[in-house]
Length: 458
Image (tube, rainbow, N blue to C red; front, side, top):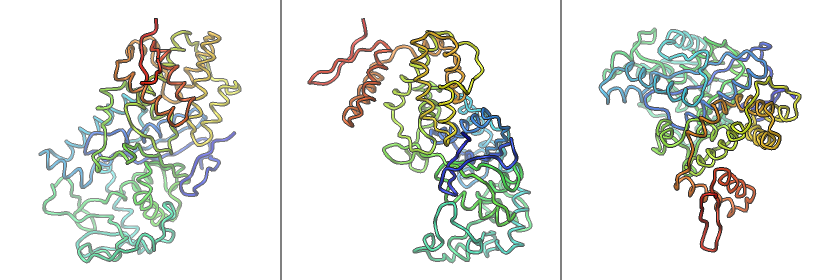
């Protein structure tokens, strides 16, 4: 079975093969570095880390680019509030990003371009768009993109121009020809610091957000590359505008496959800084070990929404311990994965179907049960090797289990609550699994008419 990927552009799962045989070129939108990364950022970074790991495991060379937005209104505002330079703030936040990503076992991309290093490429693309009549200079000094002049605008998001324009009016103060038009180059303001101003044929100013990714992606990967990824919230307008800019300038498709990861939700709302309902990665890592956080994210499909709670993280922690317990009980042998092996073949089939990590993780648990029954070092080695393709199970089992030994009462009560919710939803298999997980950790549950209590196993 060949790799199949859900393409947001076609809204279908399609067979994947790179344009350049054997070489996958992938661009993923990274962070705007004005603050610490939150768990929603971790979801995107881990999702595409798994993607690039599986592409490599499938025999491809991968050129992976994940950018850093280091110039933006939010960055300017935060630097001014802090009384520090733009570079000082962004350097500090990039260092924090690397610390968080490294802790979560996220492999660094081959290229991590900073937007401020690619301003000449942005200006070149804006100039081409102006020459082609797709960009115009506004009265306020900005350069805007003329959306209605690009045929096919809305093809990624599925939004028509009429839908987008419904109820909107041209605001005179914006100097836009159409309310849908977006800024390519922002004219400098006297209130802004000098280190966010560049000289250009369009006057002193700075780039708009959307043009940054278009310029960096095309410079590092070519006018057309294989995969463009990012969070679902970037599908519109950011990625839609990237298509308009890049294809308007180059006359070539920007990306052959568009991939978007789902949100992490809190109380059924997307986790975001603007909503104030976010948890930074390092705050979460104060309560849970990094591999548990990674496993919590990996065991859900990258396109699905993922609900954050201590209950779910404690559940992930208990489940990961089951896998490590199997590796502790039976020393893994060093093995090269034999993809003809039935378990490995099922793992591969799951990952080849749009990176189906939930099914792949299910194979790991079946393999762990086999290891426990048979006591085979080779099967334990296969479990460890397959886990490594997801970025888990690479710590010494004894070290991992000792570090996380001893569930406290709060963690146990969280598991009991999760089991109660599963029973209420008539998900008895899940309820039984939680009971078995706790039992494996020396916790015996006792149900009664007044509720569930626990005691240590004798």
